[in-house]
Image 1 (spheres, helix red, strand yellow):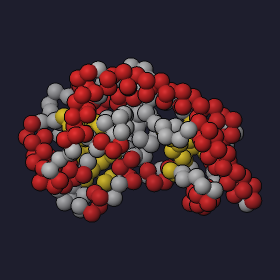
Image 2 (cartoon, rainbow, N blue to C red):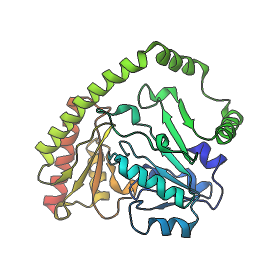
Image 3 (cartoon, helix red, strand yellow):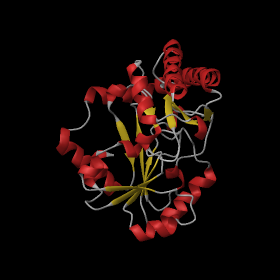
Image 4 (cartoon, rainbow, N blue to C red):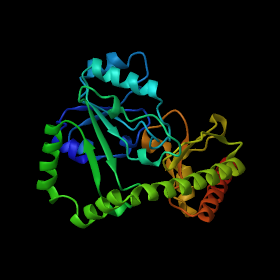
Length: 286
């Protein structure tokens, strides 16, 4: 994304994204003079808004969306591609969690792309190790070459050792076996977190099941919502770091992105108990 920001997008460009988006937590676009703007791509006026703003690109995370966990169905993907085609707007498709689907899901947007308007991004950082720092891009050859040149000028590219590791994993079939095992572990952890939410937060809000990725998106009922800034601080003092919805652009509701990917099952329960106690202290004390 940073290479695209410096090598493709220009100062004054508009980069549209979903109203609630991981992109809202990134700040380097602002420093590059690029304006990010939320847009509901399914809204009736989306086409008019894109044409009016002269958007340079759309950023979408259609599979196991960060932070909400939502996956767009095939119909929604085709409509999005049609919308971008009508307004001649390139799409940046972030498919970083695509390999972590528990069940077979819809194809990437890039699979339906016949005009070369989708830049498709993936990575080993979520499936193998964050330390590998290896990702990939699929797009028009001239764009790929331009970004490859920029990457070489910036830091001479990723470690050769890391690249050999990934090549070995792919060629030997080890990666496929690893992904299968990883998804089973993630499915177990997701179900554990769902049970904890039902047990400790069932009357406070709502959440949906997910079919892959790392996250569950929890939203407080309006009448039970705490003051989120103070609530985040109270949880931090109890040793729990929260990702509140407002850092991703959620303005109308009080939400939390819960991750089931990293902490042990025991720590997940300990953490949620502390979050519930912080909530009770704040909400019941007001």
